[in-house]
Length: 242
Image (cartoon, one colour):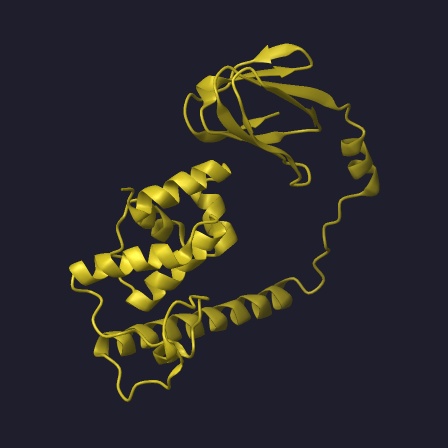
């Protein structure tokens, strides 16, 4: 039976995305996601937050969040970390969308909090307040030092020059089954995101630099306007094609 981490990693690779891309989309720290995929849940957070992050990540990867959280509860119980039932009201009704619990999740905040939770809340409050003060100070300093700093705007002529570059045809052929995702760096458009069967080919119009994510680089052959280009990696990864 697969562990939670194995299921998360397999689902992410099936979508053709990296941990960094997943972290940017879900707003969950990449080191947390790496630990989750390594089946390690010792991230110095209350179980409530771990469950919430896993629920959000599972939904993003199109997995069943209730099953993931259920398996997590078994792990936390075996490690003696589950403790009393977490209450969403402890952190100001933080709700990650997990509807599997009973009416206890909607009750009022408990009369007391553990010292660990209080210390964590105080730490987050101080960090958040300090960050806001620092941002305001930086904005005021910029306004004082650069009162009339010009806004850089790309001239229409430069933009027209970029668009005027002749388009090229990129053809990808799978020597064995693999998955490929192609993003155009110029405007972030996804040109291709598909699984290729053995012998299958896909062609896209290349306009400037492309960012290519491939599940197995050794299974891919690449041509630009009929000219062969070597794929610079053998396994899973992403590379740029100018």
